[in-house]
Image 1 (cartoon, one colour):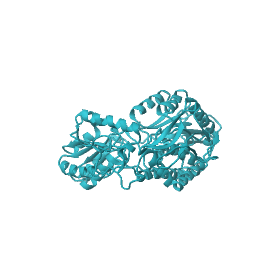
Image 2 (cartoon, rainbow, N blue to C red):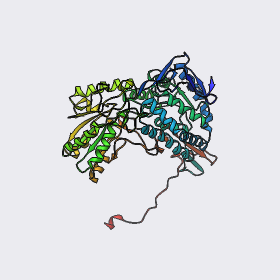
Image 3 (spheres, rainbow, N blue to C red):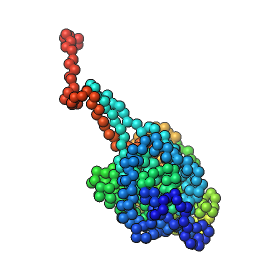
Image 4 (tube, helix red, strand yellow):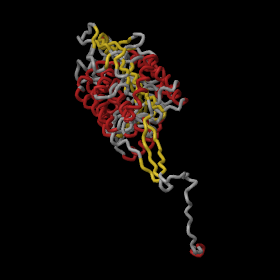
Length: 542
């Protein structure tokens, strides 16, 4: 084993077409670089250039996950006892290191998961913003002094850490989301075992090394790589074994429900940020050009691979034809390709072959539901490509933008998330019908309305069942000081980001400090205050 900061990157012999070397990746357990206990590995590949091999990483076993949990438990007492301002200083160091290395991290994220450089820069900037926000929260981890109902007694409340947190995040925001989870977790004094996304292990490895370079003590954050069904499942199973005090998960609703069941039967806290079928309503008073921009970006930015991507586009029937003409002109002109090679692309490849296969299944589900496919032809190939496709199709995993119309709420595609470049479009008769449609799916993550009628905007934001709402803005977007999360099938009510997330990684501890030198019992020893008798006949005042 080698300490994480005692070696540079190790490279593998390879013949990548872009001349970039493949990296030997490691788990980071108690500050040490380790391989899987059985030597098994898996590869990370560039979805825009499938011959581009980024590196090999440990396919972690249960023994590896247990070693990471051991390290986290061992580090917990010392880290919890570290003054919160000191913890904040280390977190601030992380943010500054991310700024120093931002361009390299952005390029790595684009290479590993295919996001455009602009979108990858947004993801990394969100991680930076999170660090800088929580650096100052180290001096504001407040409790309260509370007045007692008894004399010579003081009451206090304190925030206490939960213990060891299991962190599992998806690969579509591999910089922002793990920082959303781990930065507030360690700010509150917890330690973490982080299972990296299978499709973004190199970026996760780089970020974990930056965390240690910032001054993070060994064992506070432990990184293990592997599959969700392997290392991820081992981490969830550890809840049943009493070894995990918190699970924070971003991913599918199906897996989130399973994790919620395991945590629930063990009375263990869990944060679940799950899927969405995010509605966007356009009313006749809206600026249609602005609304088209929002719908187009919401549906097809990141190749539709965001939990906040536009799902159901709900158009008032009076503006339907004009809106669709404007929208389809943009869809048909969409620039698609590898952002590392071509400028001005809206989106690049799917995150991986797995996501591509799942998306094509979802497209067939939309067709089988009875929706009308007016644009989109599945996977892009050299003889099946849109006008403005800029890359070599067979080099990567690229999809057409898909548009389905004539969708009604009795169709399966109205209710099911389609994780990829596809939107489903419904007509609404009036505002009430539009609001009904917006609330009719089983999800409740993000939502939006375009209207210049302030009463409609008010009625929408008070009537929608969602964790987030945009008014004259798209279904996407998050800031480090706002709560992020959903309701219904999109989550269990916990939130990422902002001061609200602290509730998810700490518990309230009430302290009763008796100064009187004797036993005083609340409620029982409180002297009753007698009311004075008034010599007034109140009936005479009527």
